[in-house]
Length: 119
Length: 517
Image (cartoon, rainbow over all chains, first blue to last red; front, side):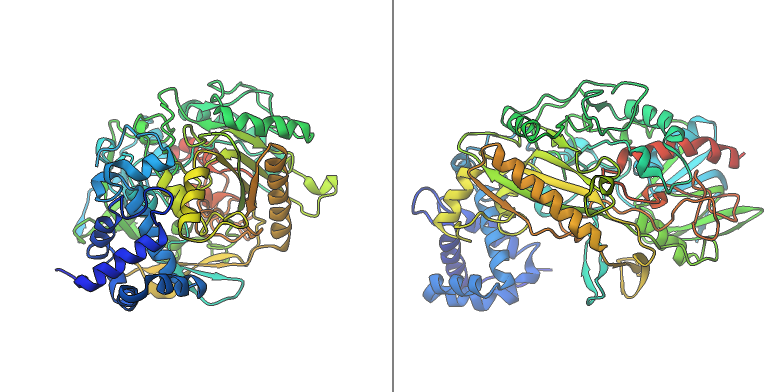
């Protein structure tokens, strides 16, 4: 019942894309939040159906992530919005979901801790 | 096929309408079976604060294919209508609890006076808050609001002040938010962890009422001996048949129409499915210099109904029916930093000059999260006979039933009305000190964030030739088939529908009980 998984080069391409979308230039970005762990788990889990369409982008990003993202954004490619949404999720999700390490994304947004999170 | 013993009343759909009727009819001594396609939710487990579960995965809403044919365009498959799933809903709604205005009911078979006593009761059931007499365009009322208004978040008061300076009449929108609210702000799309958000959940338990959760009605058939019977599938896919003296169809409006079309029920007048209405909706939002924290409270902050007032055309507006502004809301429609960030550049337009990704976007989002507020508009969608629900010829749901197909064309006045409402929202944000303002193009399209409401398709009326049911939901030409919910609405009105759904359901209880005697 396991679906497609990402290869190691694809994972590093994904990591480069996340850093491009939410970089660490002026404060903690996707990298510091450990967004990659969350995004990878989503893609290899409930969003498995997206993997095949994303592969070419991830592979491309291993050599030039900046250009890969710029082209997706310029072309209004639906994969741009998918990847950006995943980056935000990895940055701001409940840390129990595998991203937003130590609440670093919440900290940067000044979001108060939500007491009713149970997951 | 498992055949069950007959009962007095079988209700399909246990949301706001069905749940209200189920408990009312059971309290009147009838034996009731309630069939609900959604699960029994366990608040301690599912009414949590996980943003991924509620705003990304939308765990409390249905995700079934529906087909939209918009403006004669190509059929588009999506989950167009935000529909709550679970026994005793709605859970995931915002809690706006408006009465319609007397002029909203002009083309209905009942007048405001017929409905008012039931509005009174519905407001008490739902713990509705408001400030009596504050909104000059509010419906007339003999009883005051049951509870005082919600206190505003400090940052939204400036909208009310600015509205007053513009000559408008800001008010506290009626809110079904009870005293237990702890202002967590994760409200719309979430179940309420403190049980404060009004719903029919609380009054579903009682003798004489058997709830069967996870059951999907597929057809209503002749049950023999003057009865009807509902055929349904249980969670394992096993077929059942439940006979009853009276059957009540209380699903979300398009799904009542679908079940009637699948079962070939209703008067032979080609009215089932027609006069589908949604609501017009758009938004504008502003970023300020200081912290507002609008997502530390429920959504009901500042209302403006000067463009609703029943008859805007009489005051020279180029549209017949208006709508309201709801200010002080989070831009993403619900609270939480993830919902906010994720909505940017998708359902929430970026202010000019903000990049679509990278450090510029991240810095903007982190700054704007606590310093913004939005104004959402909600307006009447004019009823048109050719806007309708049909059975899709190709797409099927997970049970193999034809998907709902919406054939929809917004009225040109709806577009004009929406751009007026959005224009007013922009003006209000600017006058209240917003530094950056952005607005959605005025588009009354259903879908995405706006399609929380569907009405019509089984309209009430006195003329059996042009309507489906009478004013208590009894389907014309029958003695024991009722419909309930917003499907009965003749028009959508420029306010949220829930209170009217509950008031109509309460009003129908005696007729349904009598029919089952």
